[in-house]
Length: 288
Ligand code: HMG
Ligand code: MG
Image (cartoon, rainbow, N blue to C red; front, side):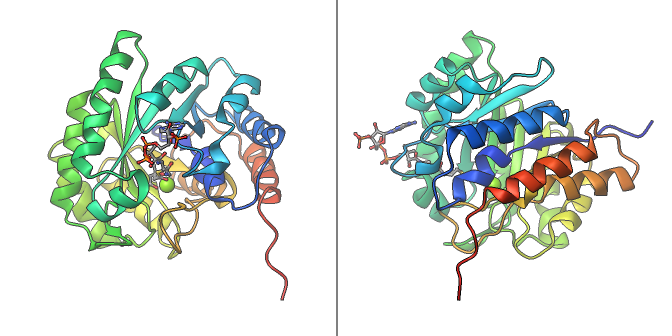
């Protein structure tokens, strides 16, 4: 049997958050249920952020209340502050994720706070979550490039990752939010982070703006990363990153990892079905 690599499915959150037209609760639930059938250990279902900032995630509570929970799957929610934490707990999220940026420009655009202020907001969340044994994942965004500040120094990524890990995040997901990472910038960044956080606690989160996502996965694999975020159907982008494309498509990522001899535990046929459904939720391309 091949070595285990896990795909963390983020499509219902990172994918759908960027869709400009409203997608109903029933369709979101149907997507999560199809993903549960594919065998994921972890699925990010939605976020409890300001609906003024990200309207598409405004009904995440209803989605959590309606999904059919598979016993072996943990259903995750993204939260920016204590208010979101409370909503995630009420929704019975099995784990939560906090998110910081490695660049000040994106931090301001995404959460209206400096990096330091955003980290300060997370401390009480980690504190409360510890009391109820709720696992907390940490994201670092813009790990190679920022749409506002340009190239990002790997030392800044390492510092933010180190702080999230020290706070108690069990895993740090390294987000190439803009999808501009290259073999060189991704490798330098992972090497810098690995000095602070063990590779076994890292995840790679690659967007596919330049068609480099699978190559960047290979770079991170070579440096010991064994968890990768994917969005079914290649959904996504970020509302605060103009021009960024979707996450690496889960179905393509799974096929790639299996070809390399890794074991993911996912059902490729169920993934392909879920991908077709995910694509059908997208806004039709403008005519003309
Ligand atoms: P703000 O406007 O500075 O803060 O937003 P505020 O505290 O003044 O709140 C404004 C309003 O939002 C208030 O309502 C609050 O009650 C409400 P009002 O009084 O005006 O009626 N509010 C909330 N409502 C629901 N849930 C909450 C919440 N908090 C406040 N949790 C804030 C600051 C952080 C809230 C805002 O900037 C925000 O929600 N940002 C989230 C943006 C977001 O979700 N971005 C996408 C996810 S990150 C990403 O995609 C990257 C990632 O995928 C990795 C990668 O790709 O690299 C993770
Ligand atoms: Mg993302």
